[in-house]
Length: 308
Picture 1 (tube, one colour):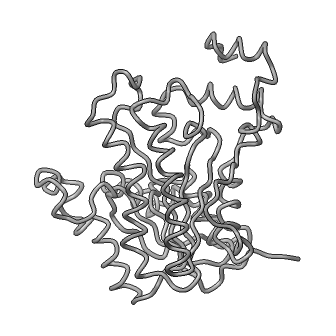
Picture 2 (cartoon, one colour):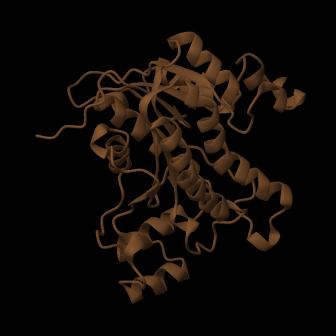
């Protein structure tokens, strides 16, 4: 037996606000492998997340394979669009969902982790963050502000987390980001600069793999996941058609499960993957390998908008 053993390790997963996305699945998989897990949650979603946890609404999702309950070690308010609190506009800091959360910037999370657990205290950092305010707009209609916002929230935030959390990392740490196939090919309705933001994320991960590897012995990898109907992805508006299209055309025709991404993440962050860095691992039922549709009839139905 060759187990994934993360006993004694601590992970920080940025971008967990419910039990329905890849961030939660990754956090739980790391915990199943033995790690203690802290998460960063966007302040406007944090109150709801805390309420769901307190009222037991997520208990079914928190159930571990051995029957115990997955307990998050710490939940931090995090808006990764801001490196420091001073970068956040005053009107944002004054909003109800922000003003009582302390320093919600990346610097603030770093200081809170250091205060709570000492220095160094981390072994794993997961970036499960993406936001494009104009994602529903074609690129030809995307503003400079919307384009740069997508890159800042979805790509540069990974660089900023690496910069600021590296001093808290113990030896042979692992950094992991989440990408999407639009980084290397056209997904027509994935607009607002998000496709190029995912391409930037992957390029930055390769550079970070060199710099963090040579400098501190850390590894940096990316998972490119197939479509999954999380709350965030569903907001884009065409996710269910994408899921159906993948099922018709991927080598493995069953729908992607969040735990499959979680398990892949646990492997990449474990000593079993000690020789893997600077890579993009596709967890998409093999769809990325296809050069043409496997089901031409299904393609016609998908393009016509059929949901049957």
